Length: 203
Length: 126
Image (cartoon, rainbow over all chains, first blue to last red; front, top):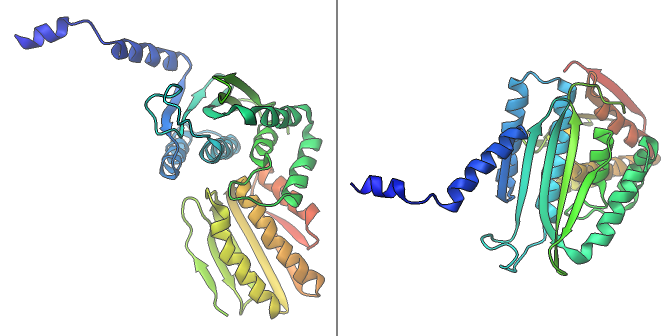
């Protein structure tokens, strides 16, 4: 009776972890999550799935558009700005352009969470930019957006922090971010963006 | 010169740039990862059109969503139009937004404050 023998074997570490992971996601009301390479096709799929979900939830058009816009900017930030991690000691199983992406729904807002590696040497300037955005009020954000839009040269990746400013303007909230230094070469950047769905935005 | 007609996709807008009528239209979504690639032929078309434009040029922008990389490309298009306008060409940009879509209205107003061309904000039913 080989089946019974198999069933009596100790459960693998992964099988226990997956239940734990499921419960954590369930507890955080995660609607959708992804970990892996961020490709153009993947972004199209996620946007399509989320749009259908928001439609079926009969979400307010205004909120739906904000969530969609923020999703686009968050995903494209990942797509354009992930730094590859060739060091297998940091990320064993991936091609290097791997990231994590989650969308949760809470009582008063949607959470869009992203996490990706970047070079530690890029952290100070990036952090400075995010802190600058967080220090500005609605009017100053608008002016900064226009200034960057009008003056900086266009790169293929967009850039100049326009995406982050756009997220801050559309959500009317401070950017909630964190950096974890893995080693002197690589750091892990995470971002948690909230889009209110019960109250109207104040901007 | 040829009319540009491009069908819309989930990530790129439909384009109708007609040199005989002087009506230039962008409609739908503009959220490609590489906006420059999409907008380059449009900017080039506009360069050619600028050499012999119609007496009146009407630009209709009716976008549901656009990403920040498209926002730079839109500004490039508007800057070409602005220099035509400076040269005496009659140009009007109509910026359509769905009712209550304050973000899209505000985006139009951002351009209006940067670009020296008459803008008209038009609210449409969602």
